[in-house]
Image (cartoon, rainbow, N blue to C red; front, side):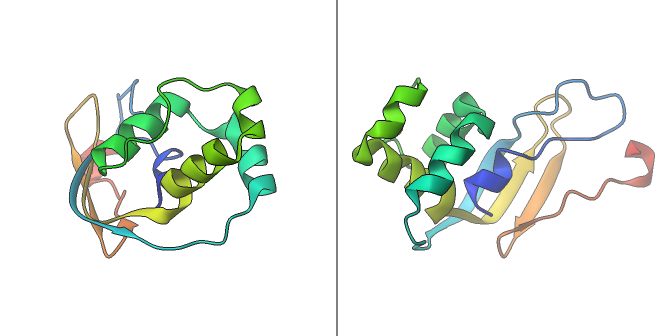
Length: 122
């Protein structure tokens, strides 16, 4: 699971008011090369919850993203490449996503998060 996906997932358990961002418990992280596309990154920048991305990337062992960001950074090739690597090339292969409110763990297996809810959580 790429961090771009993580940045868009939240816990939808009944009664949860704060299900984002899901905490990552990583058992296996892999890096997969993806073609660099600065235009895609510039378009995605405003859609990304920056603090969640920074926290998630650090959890996966990548600490090159700045703590804060602003659109002027999109002019820097170095920033775009760091953003690209964190967003698209880091993959949570095995582990879990944890609801910040309930502590419910959603397993991630072979890079696929299982966000299905139990009957009593709907």
